[in-house]
Length: 297
Image (cartoon, rainbow, N blue to C red; front, side, top):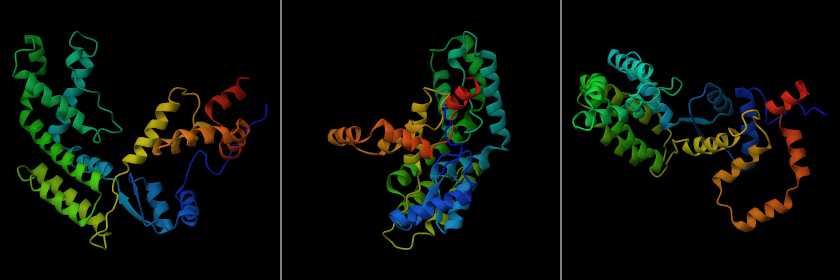
């Protein structure tokens, strides 16, 4: 059996800033000069943009996650709060009280999904005021009530985050949306954590808004479209974990297109299995199932 090429220009083990910069130069030749790029803050991507002379915009969702990390990572109240949540999950996950345990805390996206923790906590505080819980359930959840002031403060910060995120994700960053965000941030005035978050978010707005030269200019500061597209792709390839990047990668453009029936029919009629095989051989490297077949044949 012929072994597919191990190196290719599109599928490889590692992409460096220099590699991505070269691809950006190719893109410039095809679609014109790239004015700026919105990323999750990856060092490799930032290096590529710097080498290509392209302005970098930090995706608002990931930027907020960094702000929350600065706010809570070393905060004694937050550390105690999350530790107690973890202990409750560990002790009760296989018990008759597993239905009331907190959501799992993913270490990789811990601060990106902090709203999930506050959402559970607020539901518990509401439930403790009612008579739907048993005596045992109330006793197990009482520690949450003891953290009420901290939880409510954290929820207020999350609500402010939701408000500014809606503004920036739906309308982009402009002088007008910056003004609206600053208006929302005025709600951050009760505690030191809220004031710290306000200062961090103002720095984000000022840094990125510095690229706005014209009154009418708007900057896209969210990478949700890319995140959603690759999320759908990962969902498809997860059905076969022994694969990897295969010719199924060709479905990615379809996730961002509104294809008509005639367009789909023409695509199917004009693309042969031979063409797909040639494309795969030219552009993709070995994936797991191919390596397994070669090794264990």
